Image (cartoon, rainbow, N blue to C red):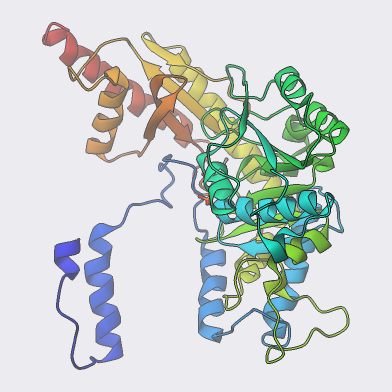
Length: 440
Ligand SMILES: Cc1ncc(COP(=O)(O)O)c(C=O)c1O
């Protein structure tokens, strides 16, 4: 693709329609079909058409949605979409909702508020004075937390490695007893990071216990719920998240279960003042804040910004509460069915308790490509990708290379479950036969 686009800086311009036609012609040769019903890689929503159309309007309107004064439409729609999100996710209705680019920046933004707040309680203004000389902030986090949280801690000067790693169980859930033990001596400013939806297993931390342990130590509790927090939209899955609403902040993605186009995420913080203290950008030349007006850029780490709330508004408006609920139920049902079919097959192990939409699987114990250390599972993933009928990804889970199947695209229908299971099992049979043929 680089070769396809590699050309010297154009000295003169070209006709705009020709530019776009050329872009489409060349660009389409390097796309992944991420919005396809049988795309199960990583954890990616399906960029639903209504969200895409709303996103076109966002660009076509050419708004800088930093302030209400600069774009009343952008600010007002964000305000309403924020209220709808709090309702859908059943989180405190007076929490602040910052519209960001995704889960990583959601974690960063909420943890910035957390850092500010826990230090302010110790009489230290980190936003004004930075971290040099500040009382050290202790961060407690599950060993199986998502990599983006560690990145966010790094960006915030709290260190990717300078954390207390709390033990987890076989599903990646934080063990509350270990958190309690590790927090016994925590008297200074501290933050606990919990997780709703482990990236591989889809498992949920025990929020009720975590929050009570953290509260006893005066700690802030942040929850990374990029996709898992959407379980709250369905009555049957909501219990998985019990107690999560008592935390202090949450990060969630729109470009996962809500199916908005990329990029869309939310930093939700109970204490609006703490979020604003960490994020606010102000100057006399910028539009003033009128009575009751939302100022989007006071809640996120950007000044100039697109009106990110608009695709979220459009997705919620088109799905409604019942549509979101149905999406969650459908995807979890499909995941269950695929897992059942795979688990019943010879040589296939489903490694997680499929409580949500994530499945991890390993195949046999054959080392197909000697020396790569990854086992037959990688060979099945590669075989499936080569055939091009479905897309799954891989990753390490507790020391083992696994196939990851994430059911989260709105185009994926119940009828896909058996087709997908059969395709995977056929690929596994071929890999096994080839390996036996080669005497492995
Ligand atoms: C649990 C979890 N947290 C955070 C993220 C990061 O989100 P994003 O890729 O939107 O930045 C992901 C992405 O898959 C995730 O699954």
